[in-house]
Length: 169
Length: 162
Image 1 (cartoon, rainbow over the protein chains, first blue to last red):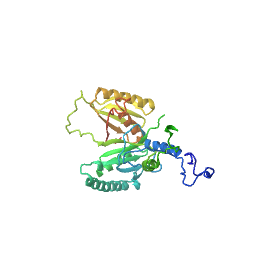
Image 2 (cartoon, rainbow over the protein chains, first blue to last red; image 1 turned 60 degrees about the horizontal axis):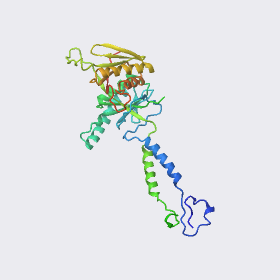
Image 3 (tube, one colour; image 1 turned 90 degrees about the vertical axis):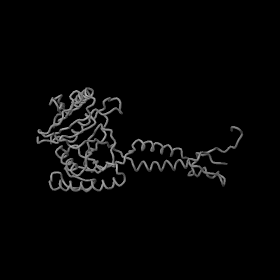
Image 4 (cartoon, one colour; image 1 turned 45 degrees about the vertical axis):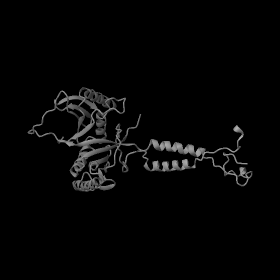
């Protein structure tokens, strides 16, 4: 006699009646249900762009209505204490003139590396001119302008401000 | 039993399907972001032409140059050619709604105008700049998500000492 498909193989009480050679079945229906729900949830939150954003601790990004998907680029981050980071490396503080000079120098280095790398892949690409800014919402414009100026001087022409989706009321 | 066939039940082999789903879930888990990030594009700061430089003026019937001057407490919407103030709005919900209304009205009046110059004072917070840009980037037809942005091109004006 074959065991009905809904008998679990772990339920020993059903095993003693089985003859040698009978197949044991694992009920996978509930597992499939869970996996399908998980799959649906993950598909809804899937980001198709190559953009990887990991804001530093303490940075509260502004909320926006923008729905433009970002693209991968060099990331400059500024937190509330005006510390500047390229990707996750701390460069200095916006209040310090020497650090600003260092920022320009580092940005120029990054720009040169990105340009060479991207143009080798595709000479028509201009995305090496993109720069992503992750700024805390409380950063004043005078500081934002300093970063934009340093970026422009280093060759980055396309500014992209990273924001988070506005919470619906 | 239909047809008088075998009493054994037929089974669909779902193991390959499970394998595929597991790989798919793994791939999606690797690329999942639980916060939704978007971007706002802007151009280099624009400098005003020096007084001795001759710049051909744009056709005032087709185009106007609009500017949003942001101070700590309010947004001033101006026409730069005529130096005319079109309205002053607070950063609260009502102020932003009114700003959006007048921006949309001007867009419908001058459909070829796509640029908005943003001129913040030095102490204006980034949060407020994003609010102003959002207003300029509103959809021409708010009910159609695919409709174009009212003023898609955003440029910051280089700040004079204020």
